[in-house]
Amino acid sequence: MTKPFSGIYPALLTPFTKQNEINEAALTRLIEYNIKKGVSGFYVTGSTGEAFLLSFEERKQVMKLVKEVVGNRCKLIAQVGCIATHQAIELAKYAETLGYDAISSVAPYYYKFSFKEVKDYYFDIVNAVSLPMIIYNIPSFSGVNLSVDNLNEFLKDDRFIGVKHTSNDYFALERFTSAHPDKVFYNGFDEMMLAGLIMGADGAIGSTFNFMAEKFIKLQSLFSANKIAEAQALQTQINEIIAVLCEVGVMAGEKEVLNQLGFEFGDCRKPFKKLTDSEKLLITQKIMPFVEKE
Image (cartoon, rainbow, N blue to C red; front, side, top):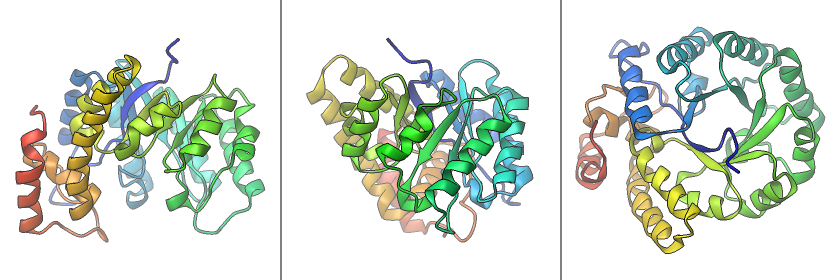
């Protein structure tokens, strides 16, 4: 049986104008572009969306715009993570007011909080709203690596419906999915999506989905049809693109792909660097021939 939140979710990038303001027109076009491709929903104001480089009001602006554009056409998950619990609660309440389907949060980072502090953070958020929570497990960035026992503390509560697993620890993912077959688990590293599916993931949330969601929708379909060799070949094609992005800078490279598609996504905010002309040319030559136009 297909779970309600399974499938392919672009982790939306945030476009900026030359004045460094949010480009609402470009974001609207990107949303429509992906809805036409058949995505299951969107993951909003995550790390791909430069959430931690946005002001608090800008995060709300993006959340509001996405809901206005999408309506009820697909699922919306708002990433509300902040270091401060009260700020995460405020964003969660705002997502609830807007009519989002679920919230998600990275664990509080930087200060090396104890597991009890991390646990209290998540429960304080879910106690403040009626929306279900998807835990965002990204140990390489957050510094918090949640074990199976840790996750059990959350997932035994019905308000915690799943996990976004952005980690290359696929043994852990298999342990999660085996222990909690009723929950939804998302693969978080685009370059290893097939591995995630094999280990029990119900879908994926990814940054490169912004411009090639159709490849990942097909990948999941091939896996579901047990066409593993074809799925592996498609993953290899995807990874040829991702290898170029890794060479130039992933998020800046993704924005440049969208710029070259005509979406006017601008650059990432500082301290991210701007791409050089040679890096942009590399994207033109090595990625653009394999990207579906609007």
